[in-house]
View 1 (spheres, rainbow, N blue to C red):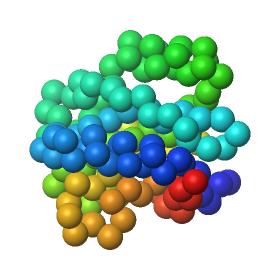
View 2 (view 1 turned 30 degrees about the vertical axis):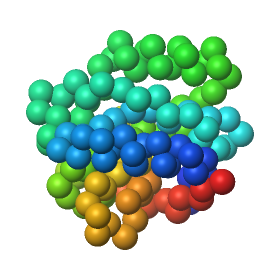
View 3 (view 1 turned 60 degrees about the vertical axis):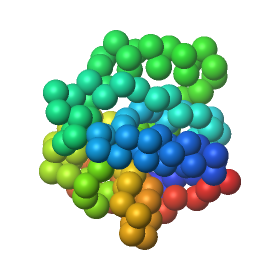
View 4 (view 1 turned 90 degrees about the vertical axis):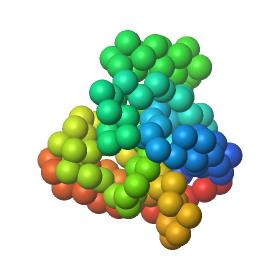
Length: 136
């Protein structure tokens, strides 16, 4: 099992900037790459009924992003969303809805005092494992 997630620095900057653009709502999207490194973020519309408290990516949008990944020779390497008011660790709801046990979940904090504004986790069977983020 992996203990780290490798991501391009510019992608970290991009998703953090996006989370801070609208700090009251959860932003979300998919992360893609190849050869073990995340090289691209696919921004998604938060389709949740209350985007201030949760996130949801519509199935049609997931399908479209996955199609674009395949055409670009990329694979799904992560899923990201922000936590506007709390710590950037998986919430109970995040754990319940973690349908991709082999895919890291990146959670962004928009709080200025966050020691780690972006954290990554594997979530499988209710078990949460934090991953080291390696920026390249």
